[in-house]
Image 1 (tube, rainbow, N blue to C red):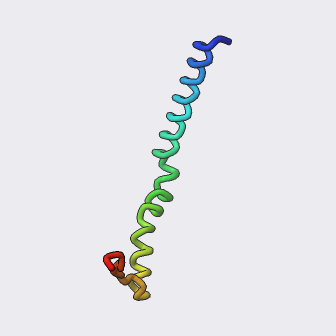
Image 2 (image 1 turned 90 degrees about the vertical axis):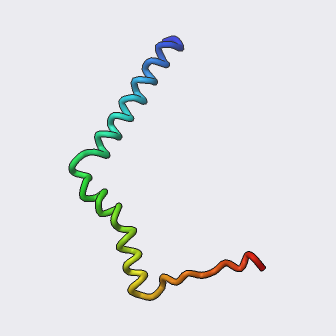
Image 3 (image 1 turned 90 degrees about the horizontal axis):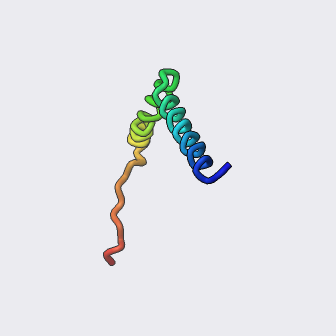
Length: 63
């Protein structure tokens, strides 16, 4: 198996992996999980606001 043949097989393998990842990402089974993960950052912010831990602090790097 020469160099060009290996390059062709490697290109097909990489292309197949990309197609599989795209199909996995857009599959309807994963939609609920991805939606929950996307909104989890907002849930964490609400919890922090409720506990009073969301305080802004100023940097003392100017001193």
